Image (cartoon, rainbow, N blue to C red):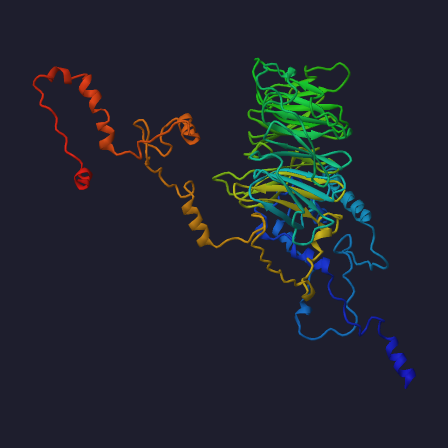
Length: 620
């Protein structure tokens, strides 16, 4: 009997009868963060030219974004039955052959994709094969999942991700900077620190140092600040004298800053631009004065603001976007001055909001509020290589960025009053200079800052309006690493019974005012009524005994009189005397030496008769 049982058991796999493993928490969390139709306000635009089916599966440019996000494993029709499945699960479907009509039996592992590409390329025309080869080189955009870092109450205008991709900085028009750490953050996605660099000034730019141990914060004030990795202030640059006309003689900026960036190669050098019409290079070892002042080339000697600035990849050149629409580039070398090496006049018809160098230093991206994105070849700057129009931009911090391999260009768009597209993230092919995809980020909020981090392969986009702001992080669990993947699958700690603590109420009536118990509202109202300032009590009229014809509690309006009276130097006895006796005291003097009107009526004036006092009659 035992031999028969063993023979029967041998017909089944070892996993037969074992309970299926529950779905992992991380995969469940990623399924909860998949992008849905409501999160995408526009579908990606199909790329021009023929696209093969296997390429469409990789880049999915010709399918609506909502269908890609909801796409899951295909379920066969037999799975709809309620009958339980007995035995091992069916094997996965075999990959499709090179041709549907091929009757050859495929034995062994599937053929490599190169076999199919070579066979298909032999059947297609040469033009289409070249086009397919170009599409194969495009990177896959991580768009399947999305999380949002919230906390700001206004539009998020600044973004910085450190080089390892573990810490994110966001700055907003609500005057605050929030710091997020993927390693210490759970699925609630809350920031671990909030800073207010300068009260009442918007945060306009954030930049990490090359070693990611410090970061630069640029606000609407004239002074930039340096913080360490944990958000502690290390220093603040000096403000210049606004009454000095020559900007080269001032020690710092005299107007609000517009941008700033840390040198990508030197951890001691930073660059800032300002509304005072200058760019300045600083050394963080000396906060009292700048290292170099750069005045742009202008047609007239006016103060035109510098709206954007950037370093190149090697930290040897800087570029500035001037308020007159020009782009000026300087090479840092011994004895260099303010004269630009490259001057592009009338590059844009409005303010330039973002500038970005390519790694090789030959291509420059410029974003402007004239709703355009321009690609420049710095070897030939008479005309731009390409102008991408119809990209609304309403914020002076909107930027443009490259993908990690610099084959794609991405930028955000703003929401117009009468527009219906919402905030989009647009991807362009750098070589073909054409639109690849439009990804809807928010139906109501504008997209301002964007970046594609190379190490974690995740796309960051900041959005917001006058009431709320956030940072959207797009990722794909199959191709992205760390970053959002770490915190999404980490559930918040559950509260247990042991965590409950009763807060004791301590009454200490004789403590200092800072530590006293809060009095009742009734007592506060009574106390406020007694306070003449809080109750707005009108000033009482002056009363009390006066002196010298003046009424007042001090018996006179002069401080010296009051002090003399209190000291006994001025003795006043009239308060204790009888007024009748005080008048009769001067009767004999008035009769002997009359003055004023009395002598004129001396002959005809009757003799005055005074009434005797009652006290004298009583005495008799």
